[in-house]
Structure formats: structure tokens, C-alpha cells
Image (cartoon, rainbow, N blue to C red):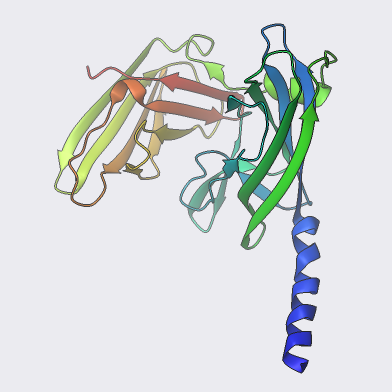
Length: 262
């Protein structure tokens, strides 16, 4: 009996800790003229805590979104605002340190009707240590909602630049095979996005492992190099057209989709 009471006490004491670190809410948003619904996932963080971007780096925990249990939902697309880059003990992570609103575009199965949205979110929150957090939240998205939410609109405006907007005039990817995989070198012709530019590689095949890159700027050219490895026992196949390259600087970020072999 004493052991059971002690276990219950530990559970009850631990449960509020998650709420102290973070809070997840669905913002109902508005229905667009095109018929999709613009909503938002609001993640609030306690001071000093951070959470992670879709590609969090070797020191981060990638978030996982589960929309099962929703009604009148055909598709959900997440729009990611510009993240920050953090360094701790020589390891890089990419994410958000003051909370974030993630805009989402929800396509209904039945046009002109309300959407019952349910989200189960698994994510990591970190301060001195990292803690996995699971949160469940839900909201009704009215079909007649037309008033825009300033929090969502602000997050939408904080998106990365496209390659055209960032004045990228060339993107080349060289792949040199090694016994364990390959060395990928991206050469980007583009103006600087500010100090301490960082590059994130996202292959279209999520099974490929990509190391943290080494990046340097030479005038109007940014060069970033990383190691790429396929799953054990599998040949390496990298789709250059599907490779997403994100450059993050202190003046914003740019997303470049695809690069030429030469």
C-alpha cells in the first residue's frame, strides 16, 4: 500500500511539470476564399525553454503531429516560421525559444462545413535538459469564420524567403562517393542573410542520414558541405531535385528546393 501511495504521489507531482514548461493550443483561424481553413498550432514556452523545428539537428527532438480523430479533414499542411539556431556543448539544434505559432492549412473533405480538428503532438522541450512532451488539443473550425487572427498572420509573414525572393542565382550540388556514403557540397550563389549563416539539408528520402554541415561564405557564394549515409546495407540515392536547402541567418531564412549537378 505504501509503495502504491508513493507511486501515485510521484505521478501527481510530475504531471504539472509538463504544463509548467509548455502549453499547446489550436487557434481556430478563418476560412479562406479558396475553401481551405487557415488555423494555427500555438506552442507557449516557459522562460528559458525551447522547442524544435521540423529538422531539429543532432541535438534536437523532431516534433510529430497526429491528426487522427479529426472530422471533415482531407489534408493538413504545416507552415514553418523562420527558426533560430542554438549551440550547446558543441552541438547544433534548430528551433524556437520564445514559443511559436505554426500556421496550418486544413483542407476539408466536405466544403462549406465545419471542421472538428484534433491534434496529438509529441515534441521535445529543452532548457538544461530535454524532456519529451505529449499534448492533445482540439478545436472546431467554423465554416463561416472570416475574421483573420493576428497571431497566425504574423507567423505567416515570418516565413522563409523563396529562392527568387532571396535573389538566389544558382544552386549546385556535388556528390563525392566515399566507402560509407558520400560527401555533399552545395554551392549557392546568393547575397548574405546576415552573420553566422547556417545551412540545413533535407533530402526527400527521410531515411538518409545527413551530418551537421560545415558552411563558409566567399563573397556572393555560400558553400556548405555535409556527409550523407544511406540505411545500412542500402545503396545511396540522393534526389537533387527533391533536396530542400534552408539557409538561416540573422536577417531571415531562405528555402531552396532542388540543385543542379553541375
